[in-house]
Length: 103
Image (cartoon, rainbow, N blue to C red; front, side, top):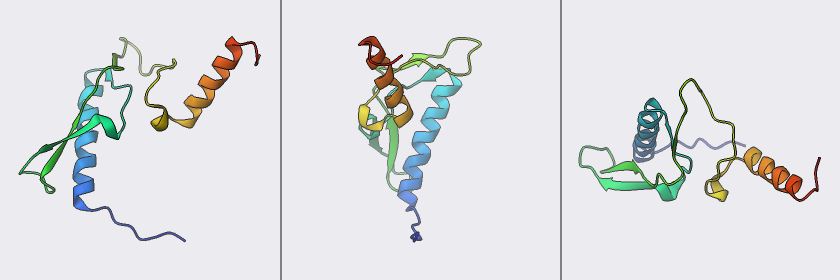
């Protein structure tokens, strides 16, 4: 059974802030590489419905998307807990192949 959960305005405002930050980065062809809750900071913003603005931080794994490319399909490591399961499974196969375990 599904609940009738409705996000609070504060949650929507912060999610919009993160989305706008990523949109700005992607427009400049920058891929963050490790977006997770620890890399979203809150700054006081009296103009926001919740009084806070989301700021994306920690660009240690970020990179520029090469010209003429729409995506990058290589192994990029981020915070393990927030990685897509398909990426984790691919990494596992890659490491097993290095040890001679998988074809």
